[in-house]
Image (tube, rainbow, N blue to C red):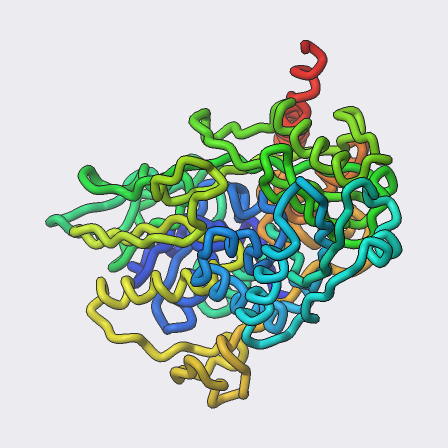
Length: 515
């Protein structure tokens, strides 16, 4: 495997500063990653810059579900469900080592959540909209069958249950896989590279000034087309006048010990306000999420608070009363902001997950909305605007598997026969390795720049260990430091930075103690 390290990142920034690009994508979340890959596949000289780490924002703080969005059918948003189901099925086929099927049990209780007849219609539609039928169909369970499948379900008021299938992914590693594939297809990519200003000359966008967040060096990157895929920061780069209207909402998730809950499969729960909450098995832990509340605070410091935590634990306890979870049972938590387009709904959870793309008069292309599942399809919509800015018709796509420059949209590649979209995403982390071996691999091949990149996004040890990795952090800093040439001062600074990240995630516990 060729090197893809912090040194690669520095060389890529230098290359972007030397030679003008066709397309500069700003934002290294899932939408920016897929856009960079799609642009590179079409033969455009493409650059991707991200102000923090890849998937360091919303794309690394999701429910880890690749799903059609069953709950959107309650609002009759059939279009978004159809697209999401199609994309879920495609990802299961093109990224089998990163995206895997998961079966949900959806219990139906008298007086709580959706009614049985509503679910029957919704699940039937869900199956109908899943065109490729790559997942098992829904099934219905009697109360006795439901309790046999999940013995610790609450019995009081249980009317029946259903099962249906969606998919599960490690969100940050999925983003990284797309970024790496974009690099393989010819894109030059860099994390910790902040776009501080959009270049506008003669009323047209011509690139961006980008600051290296490690060295402090500022470079001018020229590009014929610029895509603003910065999520909740999208408005910051747009010129005055009409801008995308966003309504950021905060989503909080918690990990708790799975044996405390005692579930076997993924479970659909309902919050006290009737909102759907998912509970997903994750090794020895259970992931519970998510909340959905308006947010007007500091976008750089989004944290869970006690009401968020209690809301999620209450949802679990209402359906699994023997669990009796309390805040002390929480192993870890995380919070992220959804860059939702403001469509005027009163309730946060009613806001559409559809995306919106705006092409300004100066040519800047900005995109917001959507979700992890639909980002690949979003990138195709973005590329139609890129083609328009560059004055091109849809270009022939270059197959990243064999390099054939031949358009094969909707068909197999003429060179190697790879099916649409000619991309196969692979998990690159060595299986069964210990933490130090994984750290060495990540430092050399996964563009780790800071210690938290490894703990939080490359492995998730930050969330999954009781001590959040503090006991092994010095050893990991040594391994990464050896690979990247850190001196003793840099190693100490990285350990301090990591301790600060742990303290930030745990801050809600002190809040609880005050109450």
